[in-house]
Image 1 (cartoon, rainbow, N blue to C red):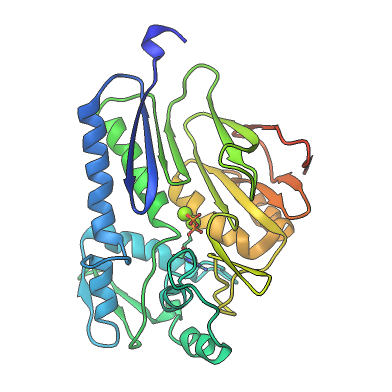
Image 2 (cartoon, rainbow, N blue to C red):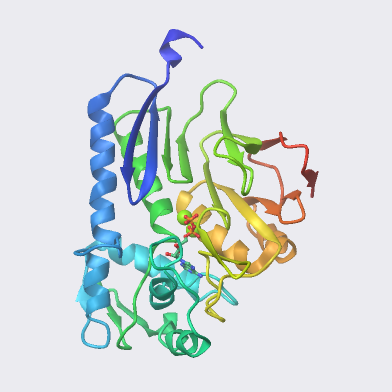
Length: 318
Ligand code: ADP
Ligand code: MG
Ligand code: MG
């Protein structure tokens, strides 16, 4: 690489995830401003510690609407729309179930079926009432809780890209705990590794080559617990209240905006490979790489990236 293409990497831990920023100039000050921006969004959106605007909404469930800042309102509006898609596996009101299962956190356990049924009753996205004029959100049922965990990182990755662009950067990469967003591309594109599900930390199933794209991977190997020989992972089926059960070990979405990648990883988890590919035919701007339990790698289409399989235990199809 020539001198003007030297990469400078900056790291932080935010939103409970490792954050990596790659810049092509030595600019510690810019990296600090990016990390501060991420922290500001985390402070607005988190449901894992008080206070945040989303926590304020949750605390007022069944009582009164809460006015929030414009970005928070917009993100909730987008999350609600994704939740109301036909047969959507995405549900922004899944909070009570996520909190009960505690998957990936201390104290995880399999809830009794009657508790799951009771909690399901307070997860209807229709009960998230929005008021555009007041930027306010009202959860109409007591005990309801919004959880933006499946969309927030994608949203914030896009804000970081926009910020870097505004600051005059033409070449940069941000990895927010698995949500990657890129600005431009070095010669030959960005080569991004996709992890082998349940493999070692550095084990790659393959590499993706992209320019100016977001790459989001969601895998059931990332956060789960095992009880009585059964594995429970962190993406829940909004209709049953149990982890989504299908043939996937991971899915990677390639799209322009990382928020779409984050939403679609969850939508695809609900659809599986066949329905997922069919749904993506209507969205040529969004592409997927599926990794199945039966060790197949299926690509929905390959217009905006290249994929190289590295792990010979897997077969590439599609
Ligand atoms: P990752 O953890 O890989 O980023 P996601 O983007 O799919 O995976 O987000 C998972 C998180 O989203 C969970 O930890 C939980 O907070 C929340 N969540 C779980 N199930 C759902 C669902 N069906 N719809 C929306 N959010 C969900
Ligand atoms: Mg995510
Ligand atoms: Mg997601």
